[in-house]
Length: 60
Image (cartoon, one colour):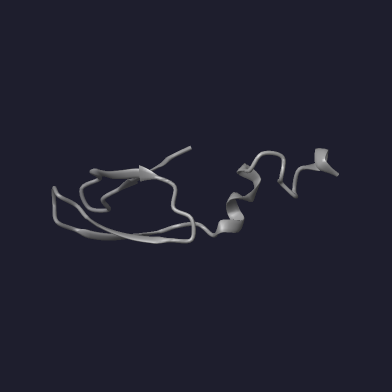
């Protein structure tokens, strides 16, 4: 479920994780590029919570 976040210049893996309603700025240790990663809105992850997805037809 973790997403890989990579440098936009040299493609070095910077970190793995899930960003929700957040913003992270990371400096690549290989090439020195500063990159900002923005997380998804909290509402985009509601269906990952067990049996609480309002879009699941089985719940209706």
